[in-house]
Length: 377
View: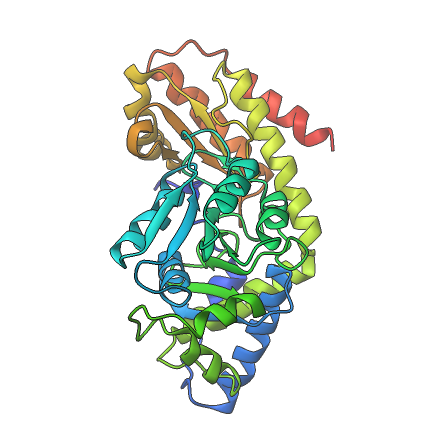
């Protein structure tokens, strides 16, 4: 029997306390009992988002909340700026174009980070822009954008700032209100330590003004329906009840640890992962590495085999590169219910995998480097 270690940037491992909540008898979602749980959950989401704004949840992956952030703010032929630095930033472009929205790109090469000055320049040159869309932690490359600085830039204009925080929320410092972010989207299967299936979205007062003029088609993704139901501790459509019950437990664990302590925990894990990659002789990929996933360049002749061998032979799942980075990088996550011991197991098995594939590895060096970083805290 092989034990499995999930070190991918989503889904992430689920704590036993959270998983057990999904085994409880299901509740009817139009009852006071469920309403009490729902109210507790959405209040807890405000804590994780670091916002006073209402946070709505829907049955969808994170991409569903991304589509909601397009459909409810815009009208056909509106202009938006998309500042992408990877696969998930590019998703904003694809969704917007499918709705007939005009995209002005300030995107950068994968591995680089978004330049706030370029966004500022684009806003000055295009005063009719309704919104700026970007990504917090871009897990396809392993970088983090300076959302605080971007927020300062966008706040000086009539445009709203929309941020994909699907992978970074609860894993790296993120302050919705303090950083002047108008719309934040996220999902359940990463920092929230839950199974896929729930998406979250928050709207500022500035963003709500845009919803009044929005002419894009929407039904399930109509944010006004969610706001109306929110007032009665309900969702407008049938919610995934068991996931929401489990989310209550996940948020309890986050609050018990403290969100700032969690940010520090993942910062330490990121430091250890970077040290281990360097000890292996692998070059880190990404201009400004984030703290929820570490990416490193691998030889292309074995790049396509590392993830498969590691998973099938040792039961350790990490991620490879996407798009034009396929076979060129590996991505090692340290978010959600991933801890120090998981990291050490993962790098020990990565060492063996690389050695088997013919890469010159000094066995134990990566694990020792990770240990040293973890002890130096």
